[in-house]
Image 1 (cartoon, one colour):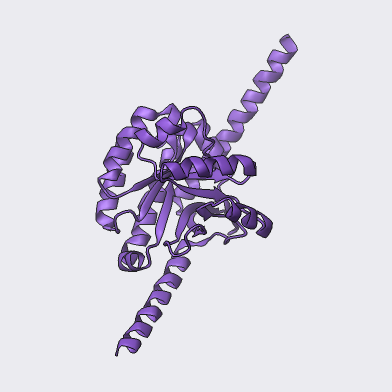
Image 2 (image 1 turned 45 degrees about the vertical axis):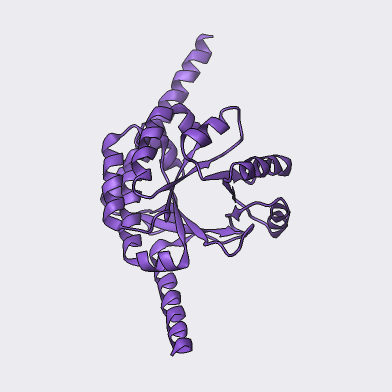
Length: 278
């Protein structure tokens, strides 16, 4: 028993050491402005005429110039309750980049999903700053969907409800990620004004079917995440899934480049309309 205790202490010490290194790297990346925003397509399938959406993702450029997901940096920040520092940077940067394209987003009906960690729910300063940023960006109502996990909603229900109340006044919508239709799911959907649920593709097709039917009754949109094959796309389409996201739908791309491309496409579309009407 004593040997097991010493081994457990050693593992805890090693994890704390690794966490300290990871958090140091994260803080250095934030200070040096080496975090990057990417976006991944969330494509409508049940009703293709609906506007599509993109999820905001975070990447980091390391000291060698290579770009990669945050990975262990996020896990370490979560264990040390530092995820709000990432959320603060993401919301500010994302809304700054989206704001000049408000007209295009309105005409194209494009929405954006911004993930927020449960740790940020209880941070009143974060929520206040987010509200101020949303007002300054003046994006179309319903353009921004704030996404959080069902587990984080369960653990911080009171704070989640207050955050939603304030962000809803700014025209935001809300999505539950990692949705599993547990015993409290209906309560979460009703109490948190949920309009979308996101299901991971690792969930069985039978479970996806049940969730889709459950969501249809409540007029909730369904998104399946991490869809990485055409075969899975076909199977999910047959179940009536509303939206899909993953490598088979579209790979993440730098947000700034994506917005410039969407803006250029909209300019060409408007020019064609002008010529047709002229």
